[in-house]
Amino acid sequence: MRTRTTRIKASSEPEQTRPRVTRRGFMRTALGVTLAVSAAGGLGALYALKIEPGWVQVVQRDVHLPRLTPAFDGFTIAQLSDIHRGPYMSEESLLRVVGMVNSLSPDLVVLTGDFVAGQARFAPSCARALAQLAAPHGVWAVLGNHDVWSDAGAVAYALEQANVRVLRDARHSIALEDQRLWLLGLEDM
Image 1 (cartoon, rainbow, N blue to C red):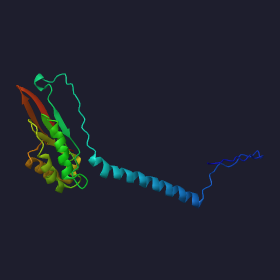
Image 2: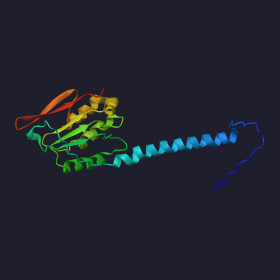
Image 3: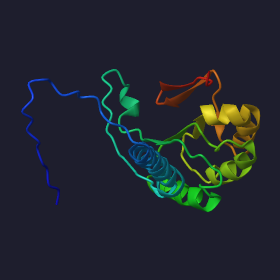
């Protein structure tokens, strides 16, 4: 419980409102701010390193495209993004995600970048897990900024060796009943 006291002055002179800063008060405030910032940073790191890698969510959306050709009505695409294979995303964890994607029986799988977490040495194990993806119209990928920062060539090579086709400023068409759906992959700038 806090109490508050008000002092009434009889003087007609206005009181100076300049705050009085003591060394002890300054140190207490500085320590409080430092602890708050450290705690927020620590909680952010805890979330990014321990919670998010294990948080896998399947979201299903119906996308209505007015000009879609009838041959592709009901065509399903599974998209997987931001794998960040590294110290906090194991190959075993990624294999569980691959199993979840395969259980959806998609017609096509697209992988939208950030396969590795800062080091291309994780690309082969990431690619090994992604090689287990199955879809009648293939598994296609584009690289993300983390892949480019690591070593775009090494990441793309590992994926290609695992039969994941990487589109780098390229396109590919999927054909059904003489109709086409175009995939376009742009290189990360």
